[in-house]
Image (tube, rainbow, N blue to C red):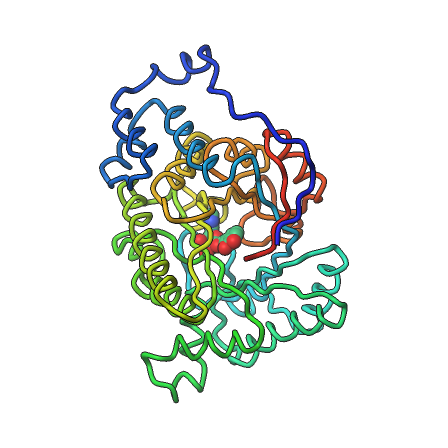
Length: 402
Ligand code: V47
């Protein structure tokens, strides 16, 4: 479903004025000519070419190339949606160093939402015109598996009673594996099929798709240093493959700007595009319903309040460049999202001109990162999103989740 909201088509993006290029970069980097030729021919870029896209001082050519791909795929359209992020609990058995969100059970500030709370949030979401609830949480040590199926069912049923068909995008791959460990059916189904069993149960309860969280950076060194105890890349990819096999679409993220190297980011992108190659091949070969990755969402690391608070976190141009490189490397991903909550709305506008075609939605409450303050109330109106998109020179189109 696409709902167009504004007929004014934006101008094509002008190149950065020469005066700005002169101060921001030494000039056009001719080493990028071969990459330009490959991008124009629709050929896949190598990891070494990705490294050059990071190393070059000519960031504006990198952005221009990303914009050319984005324009080819989406023209002057930029997507947003009307959604609510609902974090059901911040209690987590893990203690990832980059994470400020988690609390231990009974620690001050810890919470776990009951179904009355969920129903009330869904009521407000439906009244606000939302088409999607995005729900994730920590790895709660004590909640039974039935809590999670109840959560999905409660969201769906409450919305239905109010005449709405809300899409439930919920549970990262990390949570799915946690659920596979606690669910009785998992034990009955056996280890190998546990993930699939959990996904089937959640789908039967009304789960519509998986968000892209929990991927971080697909690298064992980074994993062991910053998020030891979390699933590794192979298991994250297994969960998404199982979801695709059950006909669920999924997203992917990359959390960058902490202790990883740029090469490790590129390897992560390469692993994702290979996984998407497989998903698309299976989808075209299969007679039945099959899912795939929809969107890559680059997430800039926020140090505040985390165990990695001593690190500076990435700044504006690194964020812009990483998003542009995602667009160029992930040639088989239809969408690149500039998640305005983490990028800021101003930066998301700039990103629309440099590779992104989506800025997420109205959000309202968001608890995982808090830009410039401590409030979880992070809301923009539909009019503000549309204005930001138009101002960036694009046509705002409200999308649904799929
Ligand atoms: O998995 C946690 C990341 C993710 C920090 O699929 C942090 O449409 C930065 O995945 N600094 C959750 N990032 C958010 C997420 C997401 C967001 C919007 C849309 C979609 C989608 C997915 O946030 C976590 C983790 O990777 N995160 N802590 C931090 N300090």
